[in-house]
Image 1 (cartoon, rainbow, N blue to C red):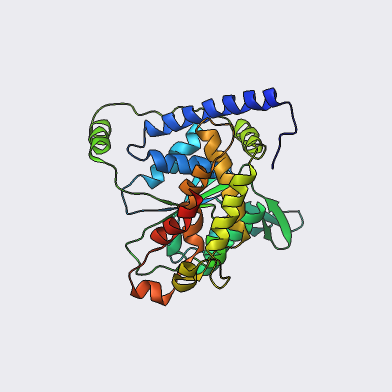
Image 2: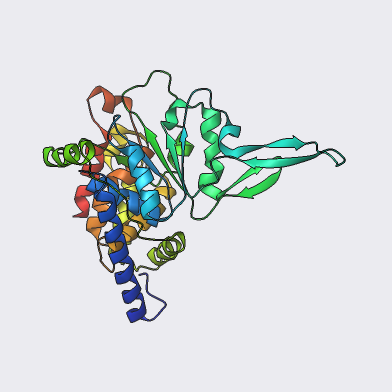
Length: 332
């Protein structure tokens, strides 16, 4: 069982203070983003876990506004890149240019691209070619890029929130499995309910000033991310994580449903993502430790983009969410 290494009272005080900050951050974001409380929560979980998120939803559901709002609320520098078929890797990471000043020796100078930011929005990421998409991989995993043999570190913290339109698939490129695995969570953005949409109508079509409040600084966020990793996790929760992830892998004999309906399943990175995410969810909700309920709540966003349906599953009309829900039932 994971145990605390510092004075318990000190850790409890820090967790409570951080939880209050995150609840204020959630409220500040929800004052601008209507009817998407769960989406905001999962985005905060992603950032607190030090990861990246893939936002999937139809146009007009405030995905872009969500990223801009979180940048302001969390005190992060935010940049947006619109991914298009003609976007090149150098348009993202930057390029070296030859400087030829009079009377001086020619030299190359690296011009940083928009990836050198703290919160990067990759808008419609599946519209760019695989070559361009892969330009993000090194930065997402290793927090630096390499150009002409030289290493260039991205700022810290560094998070990518990418959006994907599930409807318009013409002229798009599916994300490679290796890149999907780099996203901590897949966050499905759905339509708001009627009450939230009513509030949205009044707020966005009137004279109301919808200013966004800054709640944290980048340094405070980094300290909170470190605190998340110190939150204790019981053996029961660890066992639930391992049982769930391993049952989602076909060919291991762990689950007949998986062997029939899943073509390929999640690797160890899914277990790591779930371990961090349940800790972050506990903190966001003001609890001192995660529970099995957290594992069940985050099973779908952690596993769905790390699995693929078999031909039999598609033929029978199965979907990954229902399969993951069935795999989660024994955890109760």
